[in-house]
Length: 123
Image (cartoon, rainbow, N blue to C red; front, side, top):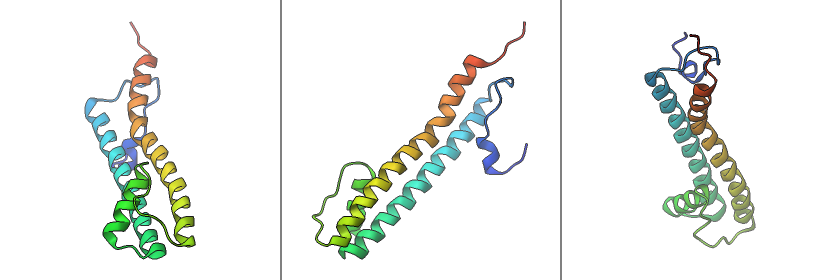
């Protein structure tokens, strides 16, 4: 098996035995790492947009970006047309990040559960 990080996320075929607990934990570590990177990239994009379009300080931009990224909504009132368009687009983008990140983290769990049901056993 290749030793690169993406090889850890490959799932075994139903004719193969269920992955060891150690391999499963590595998959989860990679999935959570990808989730963290995706979230951080989304947060940086939001902070940059709020700072550029609304002239917010980094702290205010962080609060607004984090609130939208988490699905809570903006904190500060938006004053510029560019800021409003950015905020709407960023909200759509954030919703997609939530869906993708959830899929990345849950995929190894669902695979393991479903794989246990479909493993071929021989007597």
